[in-house]
Image (cartoon, rainbow, N blue to C red; front, side):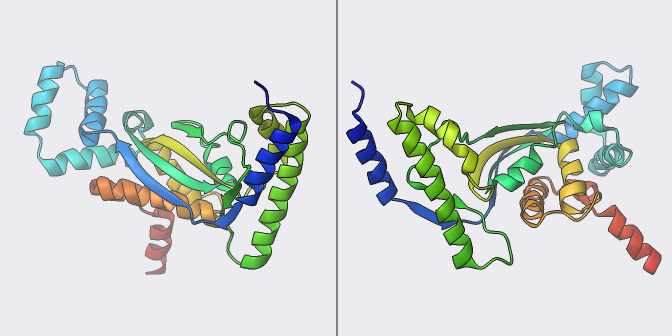
Length: 247
């Protein structure tokens, strides 16, 4: 049975009374990655350039010294043979602001994202947010509270007009701030992660935005923690060249 307007209003007011508006820090958690990453990249390359059968390639891999395996794979990456290292992926759970998620989703090739939906998640009891550097804590918190007030004003109006929670959240979300925290699962190929590092961490195309740089740097750090042999693929080559010139 549908709730009366009075019941809906009481429900909303009760939720507003429980409101939590608070800052959190962005976070990245590694949850999965391609197993035998080097082998998959190596095998992809050898299939391109060898007439050997799969079983013969398997034997070749076993007989190839560890150092040579790594050298071949890193050489592919350094020469930009993207297809060979696009088969391998890392998966993360990321908590960040909508500012950052909007930047990461622009890296479309090799990146798959499922993100918390503001259509289906009503923020009746508040939200968490990411505060940028250099902003007064109290002033920014007040700004977030004011934004939630506007959101709930619209949300309540829509609910009392007869719309359901999802429809009301879908319409009221237009006034939500970009600072609001969001959660997403991000699966990214090694090729895309290297590009993400070049652009969003090292700043090959311009100065990276602070929070985006922090989040992407953590993605890379976790990747290297799991696969330390990849370190040369993420080195700042522009910086290395500048240092070499200076010396």
